[in-house]
Image: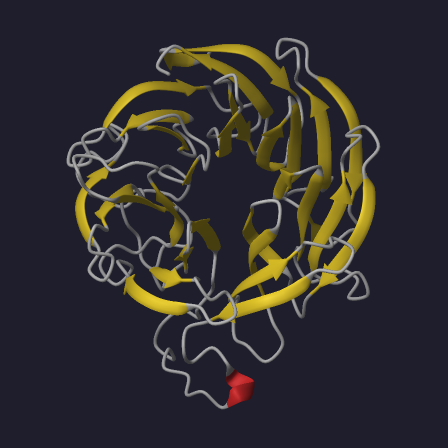
Length: 375
């Protein structure tokens, strides 16, 4: 049975194994993280009767669980899954013409070294990616120019000093987890970069060829959850520049309570300050350790005003209002029971379309299409 407040289920797409969802021009793009991997394209012009248009498959051992679309260009990540993937396929990005969504056409593949690309941002011209790169330990941040999508060109890259093994940099993390760029997000001439158990970094990319570090914060030494996404709010809140920083409730460095989201004041971006946090009511009763995937995963990169939809793993989708960044409040939610054969729901990603409809993907059961009255 679904539980909800200020939300209503109006449609469903049965596609287990889902990783990420994105909507463009009433077309839903679904990236799959588990077998059968690949990308599913669905017409949601009638959200009560979604209609699958086509599906792009991936070879065994690789997945393309992330997807972004802009200006009729779709990019999907190619990332190794396990150790069985054929190295000839290779990691990177698949770049497609989706001007006819039912008939996507591969334009090119941008290849990178090693495991491939994890998460990224795409604005229709530039892609801000987190690839593994030759000579480096872990994923780094990279900017690609897709002005000609048939010939993507690297514009610039940035990494934490110590990652460039081939460059002779001293590696300082023998007693810590390896560095891993997780998710760069651009706003204006800034790149907000989550770096897993190495926290987040704010970069100046006015000169894209030479990103410059502005500031960094890492909470993992005290709170053992990895930093997943850094989402800057569109407008000042209470006169302050605000960034939402979501920790993911996986890969804990030691047994701990569920992950939550932080709220940072970055008005002085050289000195980010946490001014509040948000946790779903009732899931952290006393701070005692709980299993992974009970708490926070990630916010929607598309949101309305001050209200941000969040995928909160076992707690479904939460609508959080940051109008008062010192005291974020939940104004709605939607959650379902675990599918048959599973102990918990697993809400993995969430996004919105221009109608204010919300698309919530669960790793086990597929995509729920949700109306809300709060926007």
